[in-house]
Image (cartoon, rainbow, N blue to C red; front, top):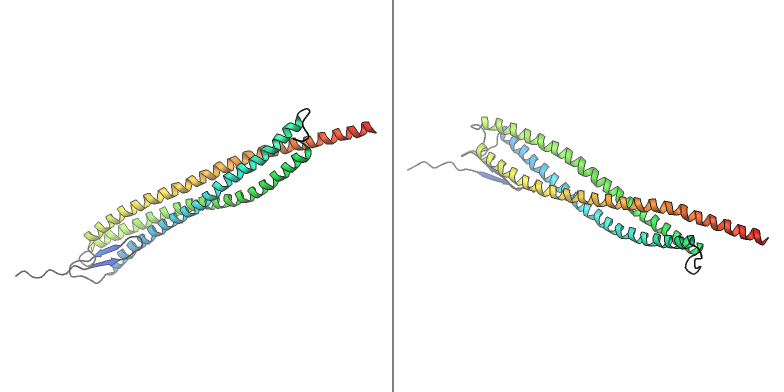
Length: 252
């Protein structure tokens, strides 16, 4: 009759990032100082990956909200453009000879101008808010990415050194180093898949920032054209004042 083999104990830590399985050496159940240090560092690595994953999810949700505002502002910009074009049409008619007063007048042009100013003011307030949100998103994306990569590299290096020291003292430790190495490789594969998902989320965030840049360029173009139009508008008013003054002089 063969002697009974010592029981192999396994512990499961239900970590929110991934379940951690710890396999003990046959007949051993009490963690040594090296076991505890290795396990705690391993758990810290799980904590960091979870934090990075959660931050990416949060950034993505922020970007979705920003993009919804961008889509809304694109429609608002089109609406402002329609009102602005009505100003231009009136100014074009006023600039021509023999315009129909029913279709064009300084009063109509000024009314359309005031409406455009109101719409631009309202639009500007909204796009400034989106600008600030986009800047904050961009800052957090780059700051978190650089910082997290450094933390991950340092923690993996720390765990590697601890694992080497642990296996050299395997006869005294309780955690099975071979089983731990297998679990670590599985963990790395899972972490890699999560990192790919994270990269997809961040790419989506980048797309939102590109959308904002495009909107900002369109806005700048409209503002520049509007500023030039104001000069033309003021010139038409000045010419009208001169014309009216000349008419009054001739009458007198």
